[in-house]
Length: 134
Image (cartoon, rainbow, N blue to C red; front, top):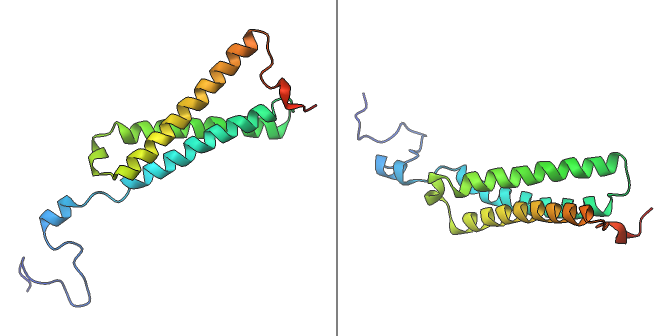
């Protein structure tokens, strides 16, 4: 019969030495959101640029680029805002918060450039006309 303070069974290693250590440890899933949101933010801006380059080519490639851009932008905005404005952000590292900010900025810049291109197009100027494609 084992008592509460006794060592774990032979061959097993205790995950935490005490309840305080278990509570002081940050959840493992939180820091991954920062790099994911940064990746999606950068991908969002890159896919928006590719969408502008291929805008005059109607077809599967242009449609795929636009769909991938929308998914990356929404993902970057959703993950980074959830991460940055969550009460669990105190358990994250400074690098994870910076990466999440990059993702948020990438998503906002991507949406802003799209709105600006729409305003320029509404004014009668073709924002992708200078790409030289056919």
